[in-house]
Length: 138
Image (tube, rainbow, N blue to C red; front, side, top):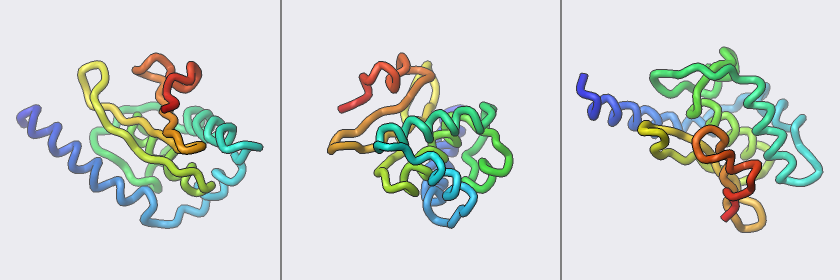
């Protein structure tokens, strides 16, 4: 299969999977998100980010997975991790969105959440650890 066609198919699958981020109830994920609420929204976002990074084993996926699959299998790559983080943030009342782009010559997904009228980028792998350097706040 042509690489360009493959990339288009992967992007289409990703876009279609975005609707699954909030389309179905996931009581186990909802419950875990509630347990991670901190004293402030930024602390909650950090708690969710760190919990997902510890809970999900990084494993490249050839096409986007549903939240149910991610939760049950505890595996995923940047797409699955970002999707789970966005879902959990939304469940605790923090506005969040998935972001897709290019990094290191390939497709990459990460997420942003909104606090005090500003979008905060959390991305550790390719962009110099924006979360801890706080360069992702804009």
